[in-house]
Length: 619
Image (cartoon, rainbow, N blue to C red; front, side, top):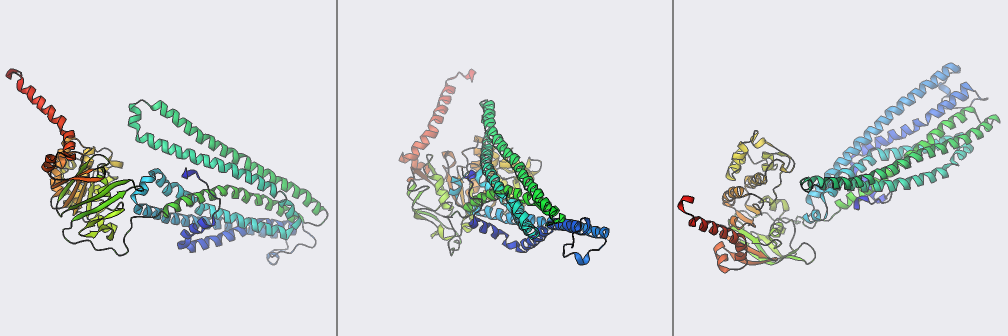
């Protein structure tokens, strides 16, 4: 629903903040405003030149009306009309050049400002706490960088220029008309209350349609994203027809909303056109009587008709730009809400240097809850010595992954402390802390690029030799060498075309290539097949060698050789010891072990027993 809220059409606080993005480009903005002002002045020059030509040459008045062009105009009618025509052409050319200049400068400035804003939004997203992404769907965040910024770009690039230009033109036209005939000017303005009423009805109608269109588009995007990602399930359960029916309803809402918008635009422009013609009809009647009585020249009447046609056009533009302004205000509200989101996990004012040499990891009476006091970890304490391999096991929801999230400061503890080398990790700079860790997640994530770029992740210090060595140690090299382009083989979005096991091995190579002091494996083998798990177990020996390792696993087969195993249960550390010690204790770990291996061992015994009873000829 946040996407569909439309606030005020103009908010001074938001506009001041938006204009701040134009400050680095103030020179271009000033030049654009200068060009805009001159352009608006030239827009009113045409009717004045027409008035001069009529009153001086075509229907001369007695005495002729004085103009600033008199010293340069010829007394000969033909030559004078030719001179005025030449000036008219120059004014049109000047209008063309000025319009191009102001549009180019504002478009360029708008793109630069939006470039800066997009960069700022991405920078903010990269430092926001992980829990912010837990609360906000990805589609909404992408909309901030795309659709919302586009709405602001339309305001900067064309909306502000058009609004300022229309206001300047209206002001200059009114000044010129009042100087020529205050009575005719007031007569033309007499229809303005009706124009304002029609415009208000139009804005209200379009605003409602606009909100419904945005709602429908948001629903279409969400529906498509969900059903394209789940296309396999959709086809498996033969739900295509039902899906098309649901999408048709959403699509129809969008069509109906858009039709209402088209209807509003359809009656608005003819209505304003009718009122303008009504005003011009009044001018013709009143002005004709004035001309007949000798109180008004024909040139003034002709100029008024030209000004009248130009007067109502900016009003139509302003009504349309109202929607741009309102959309921009709503978009800026959402963008600034994101930019102003507070950050809980921050760098300390004076970061401590990272410990040199081996450093132990210590959890000291740690309490943590993702929300309020719904504790995920309760008074957890343990110590990992340098070079030690520690495994963490437990039921789903026991708090295993939370340990790694806290260790990497994706979240901060509410009570207790986590120390590294005797120093609270909150005293380190975030980038310095995380630089010493590598992590392999349960769901391997690959970026669009190549295998090499996914292993390096932009780290320049990883050479081709390091790349090959890391791949060999995690049993990935044979697969890479079988590809046509080797390490330069392309990787599509989310690693499409690669099996889960292959993606996982690439993640292992990534972790090893960065040569971390501390290694975290979070359910790294839970989604791979038996053959890949065998390769991973072999790779684990190379991965954990010489570094402090924390392994979180469901499959106990991958952690039996760990130096110690920590058993988590309902947010508490219940047991600690080696594989054999924990089995002998017959506690939580023993129960987990029985659940995983009892059935398998029974099946093996039954198969062996059945095989021993067969006659030798039947074997």
